Length: 338
Image 1 (cartoon, helix red, strand yellow):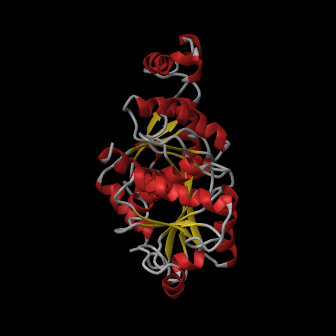
Image 2 (cartoon, rainbow, N blue to C red):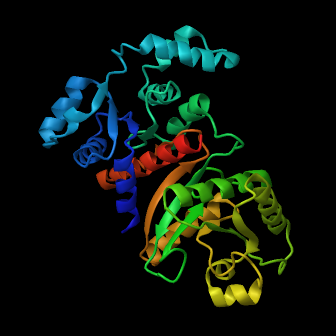
Image 3 (cartoon, rainbow, N blue to C red):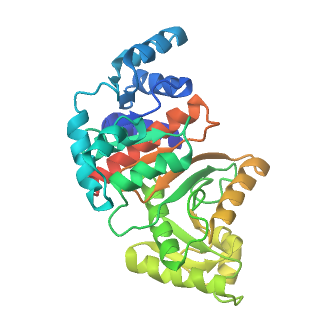
């Protein structure tokens, strides 16, 4: 069973309430319609009800009426949500008047609904920038306990079945934090490992902290950062199977790992790759995707207390459907490990 089918199966067994703030966006509607047709999630669409249903009819989408549709401009719970938002942001000087305006913004409304316990996760980005999607999430839902750094994990599905888990690897950070320090890199490692567990469904997660050096073969301050981050990650998650610093070949090729890092608990069999900065992560996964003909699922936002995911504005409806499944599985994990 491939990863997407595993995610769909898990989501069907524990239905989550997923908010789609861009309720009048066509690709979003197609993704929502498919999710509803497969009974994969309880979908909450934000937008004008008449506009959404008219669009759905024009597009031949027959399941949209199964969704909960909430109009941010005509919402019976608007005042309740505004009071909650004002309380959350009072230390930042937010007034109730400002909160009343913000809960009319679908991106803010979705996050307030999650904070209020009326939804379990959010997916947006088909129309909005990453910064617009992240801002309300960080202001309202905030980061998970012990985490201060948001990152993006990427599930890479290669044709090279001898690597990772039958050709599947998870990489982070590929999306958010440009130049993490050792503390942030340690958090990225822990969060990417969680993504490997709750989304990629790896039974045993093995994390390689990547660099251009393996166990001291090169000396440089950027190598020192990876070594320090590895130590800090072990402190954050003592049960995590992790090693570093490792070069990529030492991390995933058994023969190279045995030669370069004998005795390592990870070398030669890593299934999670943590890169030292965003440049490496972003370039690296795209190289594998384009030159290696691999598929990629993500980025999957990590480190937020409840799942909020960000689509590319160039996404397809298929991307949206997959990310609804991802968001639902993250929500299940967050509830069970909250």
